[in-house]
Amino acid sequence: MIKKKSTHKTHDSHAIAVIGSGYWGKNLVRNYHQLGALKLICDKNETLLAQFRKEYPGGETCSAIDDCIARDDIEGLVIATPAETHYTMAKEALLSGKHVYVEKPLVLDIQEGEELIEIAAERHKTLMVGHLLHYHPVFVQLKQLAFSGELGRINYIYSNRLNLGKIRREENILWSFAPHDISMILALACEEPQSVSATGGYYLHAQIADVTTTHMEFSSGLMAHIFVSWLHPFKEQKLVVVGDRKMAVFDDTMPWKDKLLFYPHEIKWQYNRPVPEKGEPERMDIHQAEPLKMECEHFLNSFTNGRRPQTDGREGLQVLKALKAAQKSLDNKGCKVELKHD
Image (cartoon, rainbow, N blue to C red):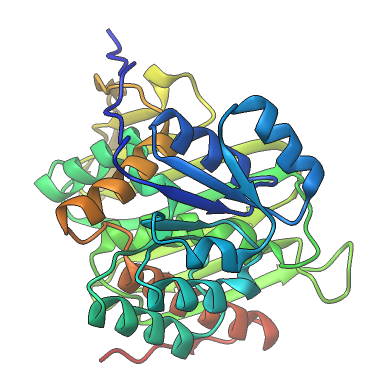
């Protein structure tokens, strides 16, 4: 039996402004409205704003970011604009005393990310990054089981995030698709990678990769790889975690009851040879909820209770470092890039 959460706590006492209400931003607008926290929508597209005023009667709109930042009745800013704007907007918002949620990636420059983290800490403000799948009930369950030792020692992890479109021109497939998978893998690994390498294919534009494969190696011996593409004949969103006791598959394209499967496969030795012994997949009873709504609630609860978000600035910076290393490898024909850790 599947448990479905149909109600969520409302946050009428909070006031959120969403900056950028297009392709993904409109989903943030919808969720913060449902949570009772949406105060203001900011976008340069007046046609979009007019549609929102019809859809959410009584909702306020504006076209200038300064109008959001200047308002004392706005507690938190939700930034869903192109990545190159994240640093400037987030910095202004934090300096004005606002809590900040910014869509992935946090920023494009490591030093800028470190600066935002410092400002947030100095001003005691929440800085959260939109690594959505951290808040997916299935991944939450998978992470709990991995940490409990149910899978045993994790040997390797791989992920496929494939689809036909949406093809972008402001960023390549690595920056568009891979942050989610890097974030999940780092959460399961509980460590940063020692080295990263990446290769890719450029089919539609000479400078923008359409397909990439990223390989990460960790000091514990764990290895992981990420395959992403927007030139694929069908949609696939799959994370496979291979432990020495059990193996887990998180397949987000499957019906809810089959999104997480555990395989109690074992390797037994017979006559000095490894022989696989396969077991039937196991399912778990996981409550059903929209991951984005869970993420939005997490942001509101984080600054309400003064708790560090799961995907805070530090976590966003770790993902950014892995992305930058992968891009460096991609630019240098797949060479291995070593990462330095403090």
